[in-house]
Length: 629
Image (cartoon, rainbow, N blue to C red):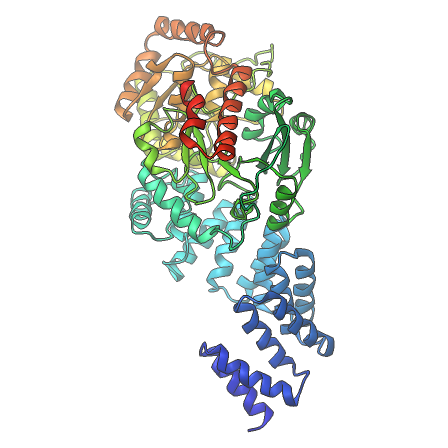
C-alpha cells in the first residue's frame, strides 16, 4: 500500500471514530515521510482528543516547522493552545491559518469563541458573521452570531438569527431560551405563553432549553430554577479534574477575603457593595478584589479600588491563571459576586482555588454546582422550606441579603415634572426595571390600573426605541392611549437619578423577576413599592426589602392582590401620604439602609464559614450566624 493509500485509509478510520487504528496507520506514513503534514495534523487531533495537550502541541509544532504553509496545522496548533488557555498564542495561530485560507470555517469559529472570551466582542462578531456569510445554515455560527448581536443591543437582528437557528435545529442548546430572552429585552411578546411553556417543560425534562438566568424571567418556581441551574452547570462549568486547594490549613493573622466580579464599575452590584467594601473590618479581614470586567474610569470604580487591600485587574488573565493566583495568595473565602451573569467566569471556582466558596448577590439563585459551598440569603428570599432547592448550604443574614450604600446623598434639586416628561397633573405609577423583567401578565395589570385611575401615567425606563415602540403598541392593544406611557432618559449621576423618584407616586414591581437594586433605590427615595411575592429567589427580593424596612403591608401574594393594593393606594391620597411618612421614618430605625450594621452581619457570616472550614464542625461554627436571626 502506497503512502497515499495508507493516509487515505487512516483518515477514513479517524472519521469512523477508530483513533487507535488510525494512529497506527498515521505512524506508518510518518515512518516513510516523517514530515507529512496531513499525518502530523491528524495525529495531533487524535492526541488532543485523548487529553494529551502536551503531545498534541509537540506534533503540531513539529509539523509547522516543516510545513508552514499548511493551514490545518496552524489551526490545530491554535486549538491546543486555546485548550491550554494560552489565548494570545492561540489567536496568532488561528490568524496564521486564516491568512493562508480565509474561508477556513473551523478557524473562524474557534477564533470567534476565543475573541469572545477575551471580551473582544466586535472582532468575534465579525468572524461569526464571516461563517454565516459562507454558510447561512451553520447552526453553531448562527448561535454565536446571535449572542454577540445581543452584546451590541442589536436585538432585532439577534432575534432573526435565533428564529432561524430554531428552524434549522430545534434541539440546539438553549435556543428556545435565547429567543425568549432577547424578545423580552425589547418587549416583543409574540408567542409568550407557548414559549414559556416550552421552556418550563424542557427544563423539567432535563433539556438544555434555557440558560438559568434567562429562565428567571419565565418561571417563579424555585424547584424549576434548580433544575435549570443544574443542567446549565453540568454543561457550562463542570468541576475540574484537579483542585488547586487540597485541604491545606492556612495560618493567617486575618481572614483573606476575595470578591470575584466583572462589576467593579458603574453597575448595580457595584452600587450595592461599595459601602460594604469600604466598611470591612481591616483588623479582621484582608480584602482582595479580582476584577474580571472593564475599567470604566468612573467615580464608583475609584472608590472600590481604594477600598481593597489588593485590587487585581484580571480581565486579561485566563480562568485557570486567575484561580492559580488566588491559590497562591492563599485566599480563605472566595465570593462569587457574578454567578451566571454577563462577563463572569464560573470556571474559576471550578478549579477550587479557595477553601470556602460563596455564591452571593449578583446572581439571585442557586448555581447548581458542587463547588459553591454557600449561598447568602435571608428568610424571605429563601424560606427554610426551600433550602433543599439549592445545591449550596443556605446561610441567612438577619434582615435582608441585599446591601445598600447609605453614603449616597440624593440630589437636593428635584427636576420638575415637565423636565421629566411627565404631565403637570395626574397620578404617576413608576417602574424603572429593565425591559426584560416586564412580563405580559404584569403589563396587563398596569394597563388595568391606568384604565381605573383617570389621568394617571406609567413612568418607565427603556434601553431603546424598539422596546418603547412595542410597549406603546401593547398599551394601545389593551385600550390605553400610548401617550400615557412616559419614558425616562438616562442621567449620569445616581444622585440625580434618585431625585427623580420624588416625582413618582407609587412604584410597581415586576414579576416573576422583581426589581432588586431598583426597588432599593425607590425605597431610599421614599417611594412605596408594591410587589407580588412568588416562589423563587428573584421573585421574592422586593418582599425581602419591604420587610427589612418595616412595611410588609406592601407585599402581596398574587397579581390580583397586587392590583387591588396599587389601586387602593392610588385612590387614597391620605393613606399613601401616611405610608410615605412611615417609610421616611423607618429609614432611620430599620436595617435596610444601615450599611455599617449590614457589614457587621455579613462579616459574622464570613467568620462562621471560616470557622467551619478551620474547625470542621459545621453545626457549632454556624451557630453564631443563626443566633442573629
